[in-house]
Length: 359
Image 1 (tube, helix red, strand yellow):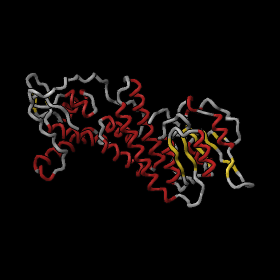
Image 2: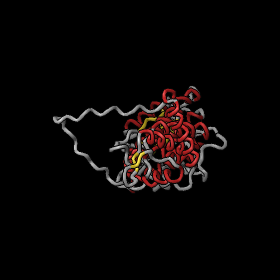
Image 3: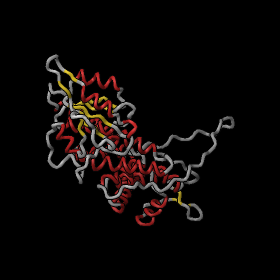
Image 4: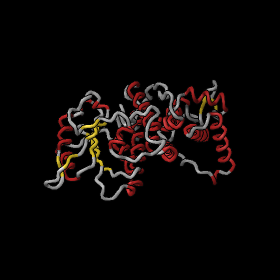
């Protein structure tokens, strides 16, 4: 996480953009906790040295882990003193490579002033502390902190609760920030989505051996034209974590491929995900629910669950094989998933995978 320096150090504005916090926050930390720059130019303008930057990076990591700012500042300053006392024993980020001397013949790129950005605070509302730390780490583009916080949330609360009460609120906040800031923060959403997907897939891979051998899987697929796979990845990971086989086909599955997969696999159930009304294909869902599979004389059909906000306009699917779960526990019960006491639902019992987010 390197910042450009000018003169004796990095400017407050440049450092704020690098860390993903506002300049006001840096000034506040300096005033309240004494975690400020070692150098000041004439006029008391702040210039942050590499040592100052390293200390602030520690401060941001500690606050992302849930420490109050005052405690985070004390810990960051202690780390900075440790580095000063025994630099050889302290792991720090590699210093930026020295700049090559300018050559008269070198082609210089014109300097581009960064566009002014609004406050980097995300509109989280009343959420778990883990959400705030995760949001701060994502805005800083601190991949290591994001992954550490996600892993801790899953290990502490279980996947279903971590998904519903940590991952989803943070994703929604990033989405709202993106929409309200002229498509800025796309990089934050991409980073967060990638690490959430990596976490979900890790749980799936770790748990897949728990699935009962020989049992037909639950088939999970996005409808044609639907690219948003995170909710299905979450459901697939929860199913395997609880011993239920899951087969995920991913995003934008063609209609012919979906029907062929149902006939070949003979799933215990099918979950069709639609994020928006434009991809909610009710005729296709009815076709899948009516698809018969198995040996001749003993053919059967798979129940189809319609997941996602795209189906919200279809209050009556009009087919006995179509189910529309409104809550996560409804969906798990429909799929015959063993209960996991205290985990798997949001505080109000709603289905946390019914998201208005991208991935």
